[in-house]
Amino acid sequence: QNYPLAILVSSLSGWQVLGLTALQVLFLEIVQTLQKDTPLERILAGQYVIIRWGAYYALAFIIILFGSFLPSTFIYFQF
Image (cartoon, rainbow, N blue to C red; front, side, top):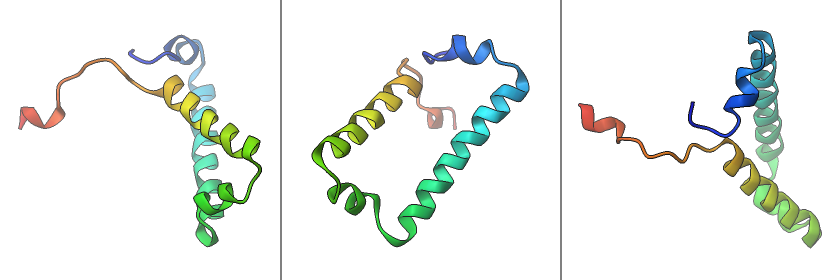
């Protein structure tokens, strides 16, 4: 597997992976519900600088942690 958390995920059982996936979907649904009335950009703009930049750094960290950065072929070249 080509992501940094492969060791963590491979050590989890099937139910634990399902639980982790359910938590991620729940998080996305909560964010979507919060953004229904007010966009996230407006919510963050009203926060203190430390909270706003903390959110930016947390997002960057999550992208680096869960991202797949290995070279791969473009999927549509096979069609």
